[in-house]
Image (cartoon, rainbow, N blue to C red; front, side):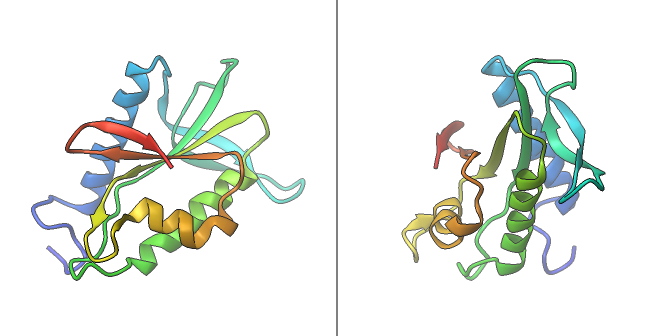
Length: 151
């Protein structure tokens, strides 16, 4: 195990895949049928390159959805995981570049900081609101209650 691996986990990649499965099941229960690794062409201008979103609808459906999943937590010292939040910013950029007509969902793990009296998601929205596209929904999954709250 390296210093940045979550305690008790096989690997960080394993944690990510498990969280994607949680998201997949949540959306399925809500009649939103998604597939893993939904690939879409994105780009700033005419030049496009495919990006694989964690989850998304099949290309031939009317109600198009793309989802990025992140299960990041506050650091062990209850500090801001700055490097991980740059990955969140990158996800916002991918959403911004995604084709029009897609419902865009950022599905994150709820992790509450007693020291800061807010969740990591609430902190992100408060400090990075200027980087979050208006059409992105941020859904925070509470693993204890197995509930989802939109931020």
